[in-house]
Picture 1 (tube, rainbow, N blue to C red):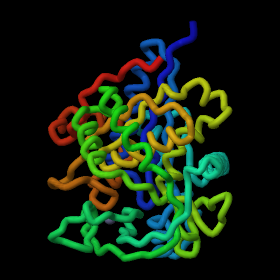
Picture 2: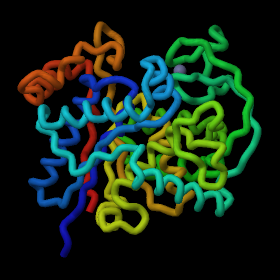
Picture 3: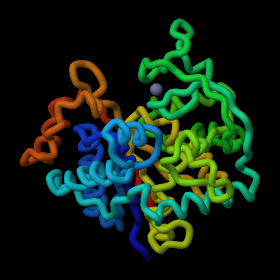
Picture 4: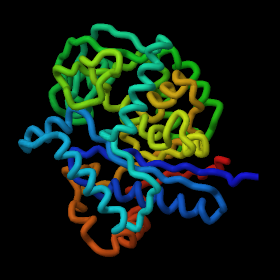
Length: 343
Ligand SMILES: [Zn+2]
């Protein structure tokens, strides 16, 4: 009988700024869980990496007067340098600017286009450059119209041609899946949050940006004037790193998948990603584990608000992180869930 299998992933980290304690926490957490499954006799695989396309990367590179590739090479390397200091040992580190990843994203787009899951339409809406997404009226605070609820910056009105993924048709399927599979999204409060999102009509997802506005991305294989929207690019890393569709690792470890994320990226992982997999005809991942934010002075720690800027250069980082995790549990609010066996 073959060994049971366990595949664990961190999100791929966005390289518009250097790593901070939040990234370290997720990476150490995944590493520890992976070692636990090793001890239980599972065949395990641990993936991490960096997300390297999009408008924010382009903006930061321009602000610094350098090429996008130069910026992402440097920041991605700073993430990889962290792992030995943290005694984190992933099996692979994927970068979305790698050829192996781009080819898989393009093959998936081509396939979905052939199946009629993708169409082109004109779209007008308000857009946050930092979020790299459009907002609907319902998502915006009515007392602060025209302001991004996440960044509190002004939203831009944009009218352009986009490609759309027919996400709306999977709304009932996704709702039923979450209702019928307790533990699919852990802890339950986040499953409830997604069910709340699904109470409103789910719209089709804009998955392209015109190359004229955003050249830093993967071109559409059937329309090179458009590049792929960051999430439709980034989420695919979990498969492209395993050599989807025919790779040995993909055959071995899919769908024994445990994604670990912070709560700010719940929607892409709990709504976009399962529906994308459904459209592709690929079995859904098994578990999504969601944790809270690290806080600094009562606010979410971020790349710009991190007391841990120098963290990776300190010795005994893993010990420090583990101690932090123990002593600051009320702030971290880790998920209380079972890492269910995924044989
Ligand atoms: Zn925003």
